[in-house]
Image 1: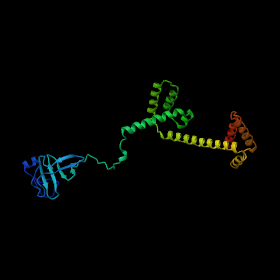
Image 2: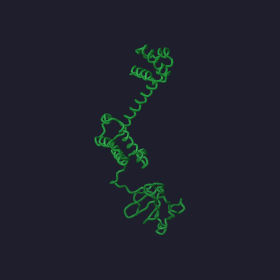
Image 3: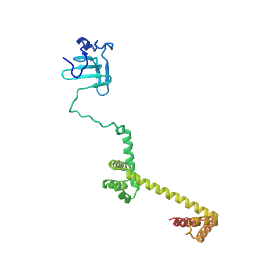
Image 4: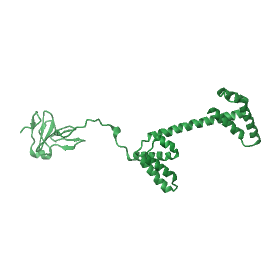
Length: 253
């Protein structure tokens, strides 16, 4: 009976050779049926079947069963076509792999810490961020808890609620607050330097400051600077120096 699906010449091995996995039908081989491995189908040993033959034309093993023919090429196993199986042509994306357990744990901890940071914001910021009502209630309750164990459990509950919230708007809000605080700190240090310079140099420093702030009152600056000098020399509280700093800050506003 001819082998279906093969147009080349073939020869069937003896039954004893087939059982042992050997055949002399391939003149170019040592007589041992090769073992091919495919990651999808595992290992297949030619000859360990009901009947087998070596196709000289296409140089492949044909394994015959009751209702199917398997053709074996090096590193490839061709199975009978099944119309009910649909192939997935979607290319594999290594970026779609599931995150590891450690990464999921770190993400959960980061979300919980972000939720705890919300306690430091006024409720007006909560409304600006449009937080869910359930999370707002949990944050309010956490502010009134004094027991360490209860606070820890409440923080865990807040972290659980944070899993269903997009953290990026909250992080962006905190970044805006940090930048605002950074600019305020820089302005504060700059005014402190101007205050110390005006007290130490008087008129030269006042002239330099007026070049940047023409609206400043020269006479008022001079009076505050001289009073601050006397207070420093007499070891009194620096009331004039504080008044000078407040005046400089008002000019910057």
